[in-house]
Image (cartoon, rainbow, N blue to C red):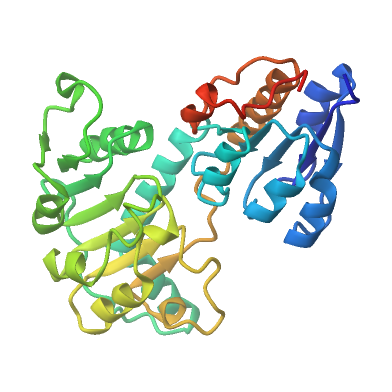
Length: 331
């Protein structure tokens, strides 16, 4: 077998010591992109066995240049930055790490919920300006308010437990688990529209796909209560940014808190950045020391499995397994 090489397109932590500790002892070379633009990735991908990516786009052209690559692994859950259709057509596995930051993202969503409701941004700005008079509006008592969850995977379930602890009612669309496992104050909505119409706070927890892009748009925003709070820690593309801004400007929404945006990052002069009823954090909901170590380890272990001719524990494009184009270690 040729000397194994793994291309790292980008990473959001200080170094690659965890990845090196797992792959290095097996003689695997890490090839690390400098800026991760398409041209550089095309050049670096020509002679690697696996590509691991965080936020950089792994495009059709990059994949077609990766003549020997057998898998693309996402540092994280969503794979919308990977051209999955091309990878499948070329016989490459697409894997991800969906089980590393559930608690962190749920904590971050709860932080945004509390900060938005308690008017943290305008209150802090008031103090910084030297004016201790508050005109930020009146927060709710959260007990008995309805928290609507669109999506109920691991993160949605973790946030549900936090909302339950605060005494909030829960209304959930997108149940996949056993309904018997729901908190006692949770209800199952017949559809997303019902969650939007009945909730005081709406939090998104679904992947970005062709079907969910702009799930929150002008129509869906009009369904929400005029004082409702909206939280997105999932993917920026789930929301029509222009429609969200318009709803806020017309007073049709109480506020929004976003860890993800579309585009990402927002332009420095974007109106959403300046609104007192909007909180924006820089796509860091996943972050903690423990989560980063776990993410790096699991991504490297998936890469090593592919290099050894094994299947990683998560495969996004399962159709590739029955494809005659599937690339194997001996191909």
